[in-house]
Amino acid sequence: MTLGQEFRKGFWRDNAVFRLLLGLCPALAVTTSAENGLGMGLATTFVLVCSNIVVSSLRKFIPAKVRIPSFIVVIASFVTVVQLCMEAFFYDLHKALGIFIPLIVVNCLILGRAEAFASKNRLAPAIADGVGMGLGFTLALFVLGAVRELFGSGTLFGYAAFGPEYQPLLLMILPPGAFIAMGLLLAAMNKFDAHRK
Amino acid sequence: MPRLILVLTLIAAGAGVVLALVEAVTREPIAEQRRLETLRALRAVLPPADNSPDEDRVQLVIGQDKRGRDVVRTFFRGRSDGALSGIAFKVVAPDGYSGNIDVMVGIDPQGTVAGIEILNHAETPGLGDKIELPSFKAIFAGKNLENADWRVKKDGGEFDQITGATISPRAVVGAVRKGLEFYRDHRDEVVADNEHQGDRP
Image (cartoon, chains in turn red, brown):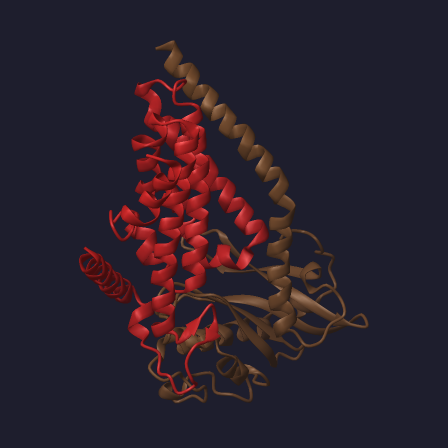
């Protein structure tokens, strides 16, 4: 596969959230607004690309028996880096995402890519894979967050999207709304793909 | 076998070095952000002051927790031309709808509320979280223990609850009232001019 194909694979064809249904815990929990979705997606992308780079570079050096603990140490370190930098420079976003930043460590998407792809491939494809999967994850979280914010609070990135008479559909920013929005988006994507074939 | 140990040790050591570097770089900005956050809340609730209220503070023991350890409350004192103009302190409402509600209360030296600010809460979006609205917080300004009945209207008091949510406002009103009562009973210690500056964050 070319690098472009590696990228598109993660971004669309095997999109982590919409296709593989991986990483649903953060995808459902933090997407109460477009900004939260985008922030969480980009933080995850950063961790994913960095861990792919390190894991791919060290793949011949790490013995198979200790590969999982090694990957986890690498991933956890990058997550801590993200957490510290976010608190220092994006304080409000850090407060909004809260516990879900440290929980990036256990996002199965990241360990999954390290184990299934980065540890078996050279650096360039590993980076392309990380960027594609990461941005695909970001896209999914952003769309989910935008839809929920739009209907649940009547705003987009905090700006009023409808007139003042709009009565927000509260359910959409409550936990059940995450499942409903997710289901509808999945259905729309399947419909779209079926139509294209 | 030795190779496994060596590799894992090297990776952990590398991670340690990276984390130490990042921590060193971000330590100052994070401390500054936390200080700014406190200062923002203090400025929002205190009557006009020209000092740094977060540096002029006194800490009092307000009770014991379940394990018998002291619970400490910090009082931040705002001054205007050196004279005490207001006091701010944080109260915790443990009886919200979900989790604690942290409220910063600002009062004048006589014990009348100047303003309140909701610092942290996990109330239901769209219902209980309306305690964050300026219109709710504004109800508290100008009220003290003598001139107001510190209950929500549903309980016979005079604080407007929020449509669809009584529990969260009730918790906030109760916590602020307890804070005011503590101040009334310990006023001398709070306004005393002892040098506690820079003791603890």
